[in-house]
Image 1 (tube, rainbow, N blue to C red):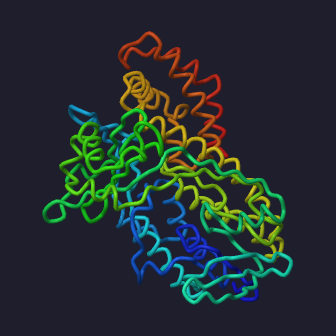
Image 2: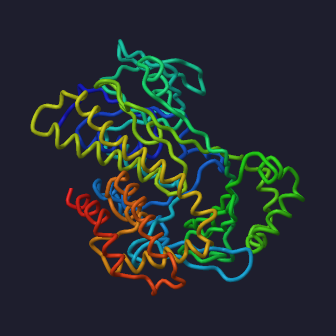
Image 3: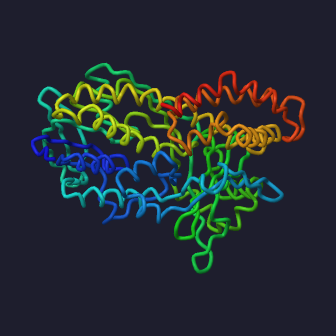
Length: 464
């Protein structure tokens, strides 16, 4: 199949843009990807601004569909559950799924991005142009204006279709809003994050358990740590920007050291240069982006963070972006395979309509999961509900699947997972009332509650 006359342009060579480039090449198109940053395969990019990725079923499915999952997953580390670190006492393991087969996987964002860029170029149909900043879009003449960050030279690039994968601050999205009055909202979380690196032990050994996502929940703030392939851990502190206890108040090495010693005592000896890293590394911001529609006619469409940036607390940002690419590919094949590829407007419109409800749902779930991670995972009532939930999943395998498993270990639409989670909270609240141990749960009552609304919802989702 050859579509050489079609000039496909992707703005942004991040994870989603690089993956999309490979898909478009598979569909027979020549693709030009324009990336503002330097080529990270040749030049180092300052660290401390990106959170490690937790890859799960939706992201892995996209790799499988392209046949590239084997090489990429060799660089990933399985995390079958959370490892909770209290202020004092032993750690607690909380399994995510039914067994180790249901794991999420820690993988380096930069290493994954490098691999995806190379895979795209290896198709022979994708060319990546680096240090090219999108300045403006002329939809009337279907031209993009880029400025080279190094030379400051400008260039005009024609396009038949342009795909915006240029992140949460997408120039393409902002342009569509300004010119066509598209809806757009950006909600900045009043929390920031700062990354700290726990270096490997002797002979690249791990200083903590390798297979787990470590969490230090402390109510209004927390630290998480994900393992890296070299034996290190990327530790991330999530804390309010301002207030009595905040990034603003931790303004001296003494205050930082005192804060960590009091709240995260087992972490301090594992990061000897903690205070230095704290002040050397930038404080990141987190934003939720929602917009509608994601397309302008058949000329432009947004994918990934450009359409739906979310906070990182469900580990679904990259997974959702990869699912965008998968759904786009599936719609392309279903809608256009029988006929010549001409009606891009219908494809873009259907893609936007199908994905928006699900992207909005995972955005809301991600904010909700922040509260769970920083506060609830150490709460006795929450832990009881989780134990009861495990019993329900085992007792009613076709009718009860936890919200977390629906999001991370299935491809059930996010909006269904959100709706199911609301029903599950009500069911668990009723079942846990008056009991002290999970084995005391009334299974007859459980079956009645589950059968009323939850079972029909999940069965219909699985059938579809």
